[in-house]
Image (cartoon, rainbow, N blue to C red; front, side):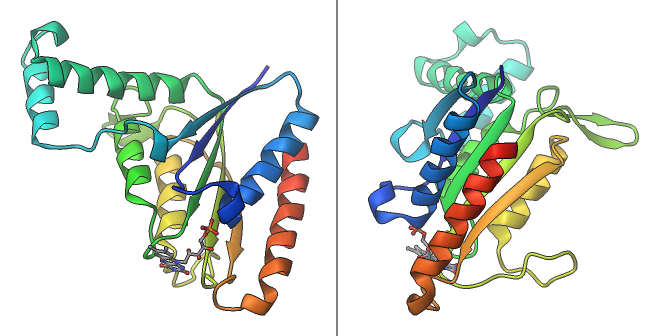
Length: 212
Ligand SMILES: Cc1cc2nc3c(=O)[nH]c(=O)nc-3n(C[C@H](O)[C@H](O)[C@H](O)COP(=O)(O)O)c2cc1C
């Protein structure tokens, strides 16, 4: 049995979001095809996803210099426990589906906050004398994202979709090279094509769900 983590970084519901509409189609088709697999949903806008702050660095410094987690003030203990919970949940899954709108050429901030908590040496990557090595080579990722404009994400392209480029890069840093994307591009730039763009993305989602 495979475990899939659906990481949604969108403040709205599927009724108001092309990203979440297509993600729902993917998840429905995935459940139909892989009934035995467990699917967990993590809605980043509905959860506590701590940002890295001065208090975080204080807590890390104390732990690094030998403090037990229980020596930390209650707020720092709570934050460290939440980091640990989110990282443990991520590591316990085999497949990840990230779903977000493109905002100002990047991910919604809460998605960056979440990804920051996963970058832990010894858990998702480690440093070696020959450079960093990703520790999750067996996992796979699907990125579902809607953007108002159209982006060329091909190799060598001048790509202003920093969200997709960043997520792909970070997952590669974790060792994950099995990375697919469904990009629902151009609905704002070409409103007359919006329905066709979403329909194409839904079709791609159904196809991918069969082999994911
Ligand atoms: C705050 C904000 C920032 C946006 N920034 C971009 C952008 O940088 N590039 C782009 O192509 N579209 C941008 N858009 C448009 C959305 O990406 C687009 O409407 C997308 O289809 C939204 O996805 P959704 O239907 O899942 O909400 C932005 C929209 C908002 C609300």
